[in-house]
Amino acid sequence: MEQFEEWKEQISQLWRLALEHLRHTPPAQLYVAAAIVIFTTVLFLLRLLKRAKANTIVLTGLSGSGKTILFYQLRDGSTHQGTVTSMEPNEGTFVLHGETTKQKGKIKPVHIVDVPGHSRLRPKLDEYLPQAAGVVFVVDALDFLPNCRAASEYLYDLLTKGSIVKKKIPLLILCNKTDKVTAHTKEFIRRQLEKEIDKLRTSRSAISEADVTNEFTLGVPGEPFSFTQSSNKVTTAEASGLTGEISQLEEFIREYVKP
Image 1 (tube, one colour):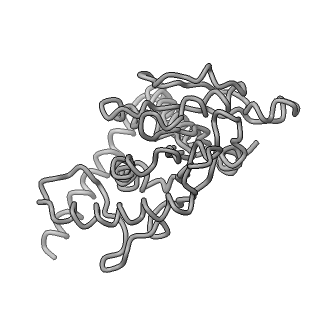
Image 2 (image 1 turned 135 degrees about the vertical axis):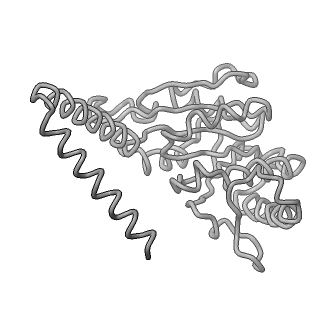
C-alpha cells in the first residue's frame, strides 16, 4: 500500500512538471508537437486499416505438390508448360482468371504468393503471413502416402505458428491432382493427416521445453486430434492444376478476399 502511495505521488509530481513545462513552451512549438502526434496517429491508423484489409492468399506445401501450376491457373489459366519446382516465390496481384469475363472494375484483385516448398526456403513464408487473408496448403493427392509424414510435419508447424494462430488465419488443405484415377480423396487425406499429426503431437510434447520451434500447442489433451480443434478454421478441397479444375480454390479465395 505504501509503495502504491509513492507511485501516486511520483505521478502527481510528473503531471505538475508537465503542466508547468507547457505553460512556458512557445505556442509555435506546441503546434509542431501536436502536428507530429496527429501525423503519427494517422500513420498508425492507416497501417491498422491496411492489415484489416489483407488481400494476400499464400500457397504453400511440399515441393512437387503443384503449387506453381495452381498459381498460373489462377493468374492466366495456363499450366506454364507443366512448370518446374520453384526456387523463388511467384508473386502477383491480379483479378482471378476465372473472373476475367466479368467487369474488372468491380472485381477486387487478389495478391497471390506461391512460396517454394523446399525446407530451406520455407522461412520466406513469414514475410507474407502478416498480410495473409488465407493460407492454402497444397497436397499431392496422387503421391500422398509416401509424403504423408513430411506433409503432416509441415502442416503441424503451420498450425502452431504464432502469426497464424493469433490472427486466426483460415487454412485450406487443397488436395491437388485429383483428376487421376489413383488419387486419394480429400476425406482420406484429411483423416490420415489428422492421425499423423496426433502422433506428432504426442512425440513433440515429450521433447524438452528447450525445443521452442512451435509457439502454440495443438489439439485437446487426452483426445484424438481433429482439425476442428485448431484455433483457426481448417477446411479441405480438391483441385486439378493441369486440367484447370480449381473452382473450390477460387471459392476459398473469394470467401476471404471479397470481390
